[in-house]
Length: 312
Image (cartoon, rainbow, N blue to C red; front, top):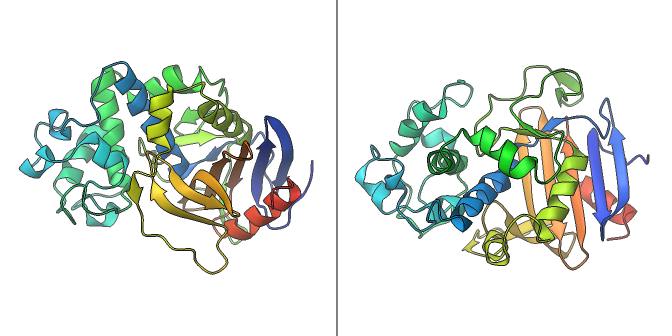
């Protein structure tokens, strides 16, 4: 196994189905399970698309159908708006009475989110909203008639061969401990929030998933085109020193560039952890980074991984 300077965790790069780089640093190994934070949004998006393919839900139906007690404005918001971050729903800090550290059930969280004041009319403005994806998970539960984590386990993880992936912290040894600048944060991970920060996985499972998802093994062609379509401009511009930029958002994925290559990707972070996953379609390359230190410089690390894999 190689070493890559600056990695406190594990990383895996595949090119055309073969492992190009497999590295780990600090206390982690390639078998360590990490909370993947917002990388999990793509699983919520895939769950919604799978149900849409089965006619169990309609992406353009007002979400008030599944949230009957929501305020009137929710009659204008569709599942498509939630999935593209264009619903007018903002981030956690604007939901009255919502505490992300409080481990309450999703049924009790939903009314707190729908009570928040909108920042815009739906479809007008892109604003990254993890609460929106919590509501996506809630709607998946309603449409599927089963708990969100169970749906993912049976309909997504198992078919993809993701034997080391769970919703919620896995039992037993092998789970990563978060760090800040090298100092352990044993209780760093937040309570699992379905749809947005509840998945734990390994670099191997996520690499397998990325290849299957973008290789046509998970969704139909039309659904995959929606997932990876440049549906909503983010307004994001390249920052100095950045290795990736997402100019558009699809469903649970940014559409932009990584190291100058066209890519579908998503970063993630939680207290004590950083994550990143990408697919470079022209190179048929997948990149997964799972770090157990929140101070890891992902941009610098990605440049080193791309170089090691011959993709720079």
